[in-house]
Amino acid sequence: MTLDVFFSRYLLTIHGLVVALGLIIYVGVSRSLPQRRDPPAAIAWVVALALLPYIAIPLYLMFGSRKLRMRDAPALALPPIELAGPDDVEVASLWARRLGRSMGLAPAAPYEALHVHADGSQARLAVLEVIAGATQTLDICTFILARDRLGDEIAAALRGRAAAGVRVRLLIDGIGAWLGGRLDVKALRRSGVVVVKFVPPFRSILRGRANLRNHRKMVIADAARLWCGGRNFAAEYFEGDAAVGATASNRSFDSLRDHAWHDLSFDLRGGIVARACEQFEKDWAYATRTEATLHCPSPDEATAASDAPLAQLVPSGPEQVDDTVQALLLSGCFMARRRILAVTPYFIPDATLLMALTLASRRGVAVDLVLPRRSNHRLADVARHRPLRDLVAAGARVWFVPWMLHAKAVVIDDQFALAGSANLDLRSLFLNYELMVAFYEPADVRRFAAWIEGERIRASRFEPGEPGLLRDLSEGLLLWLAFQL
Image (tube, rainbow, N blue to C red; front, side, top):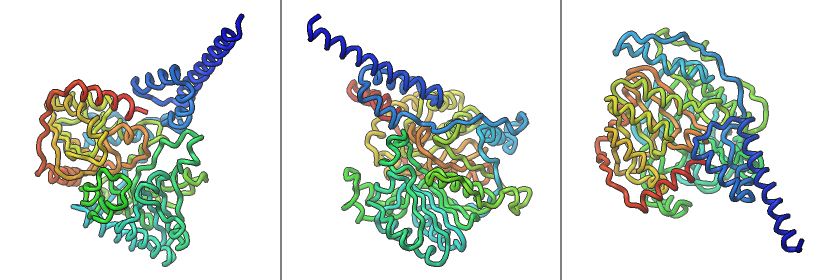
């Protein structure tokens, strides 16, 4: 046997062992932590591990897991539902509450004084009011706290409450802390604000969590008042700031960042705030690697009238057994009788959600989807056209507004509305830590619907054309690769 033959056989054997190791790792992780991947994503990982194991194995260990820990599914908590009639909204909305409880979500809780912010100016005044009203505790969770006019104003308000003796805690995503300009953590800490980064990328990359981002947004004052929605704490999400363009990292979209984006946020009081407080404590404990210590009042002890409206906190993400927002959306599509009204900046659903929406439209449900004509993510704009064509072909209506629209909400009939931080894309539905609130009061459901309809007034209807070969290939490639991992 010649030397070159010996080395070629030896190298082939080593390569085969590396490929086998990669596939064993994939199967082992999939069995121990069920990931429930879409078939294209599973195929992509298997092919990559087989063909490029030296690159794919490290990438899989760093980015391949989307569920951190699993637990037994909770027992069903509500009796079977019998719908009495087409107008029996109160009974009909029980399907969502039952589904939420079956996935381990906390029960619905009462709320009051719901304020849906009409625009960024109202949202800014509301969040500053919530912060200023805190007398004992102030907990903030956000993806971005920018170094701009709005971000500096929020940071100054936090420092002011800390100086007044309020316990102020800021939980910010490890990647998001850099996206709005490097956050001055030291200045906040010197003033008494306790700042923790959620999954810092350089500390979590070897733990396989670098791809899991905390996208939740909430401000909780004294465990009694909640400000929530889709807005990050940066100027463009509120009133705009022309000065941002000079330092924005995403320079291709400076013109978008200079102007106020249209976004959806709200604030409220009541027992539901205790649920948000509990969720913050769990996220804080995970980020600090400590045991969660709940100091929140019980929502069951909230003083509210027996006929008080109810809402349910819907966290989704790697810590949940199920994909909670996705499950509620799918069920909502099949339960809808009259309309499905949705607003989102990015529309890249998985095949199951897309089919549910198209089937709802085909059986006569009015499906309306409102999107920005041009978002701040060009790749998302390219990838969305294939599912949008499928929707329109099924009879749904797609509307493009001329401004950057960052709101996230879905309304099903008058039964329930979901509003919060989750986009209708694969990253939000399957990877990110997100927070939505499900509202079951018909009058408030209609308020969210009216907000979306207000955006649709100046929208133009999307009329799809037949894509060219290059466009069709690029859309398919993006859908298969960029938004599946």
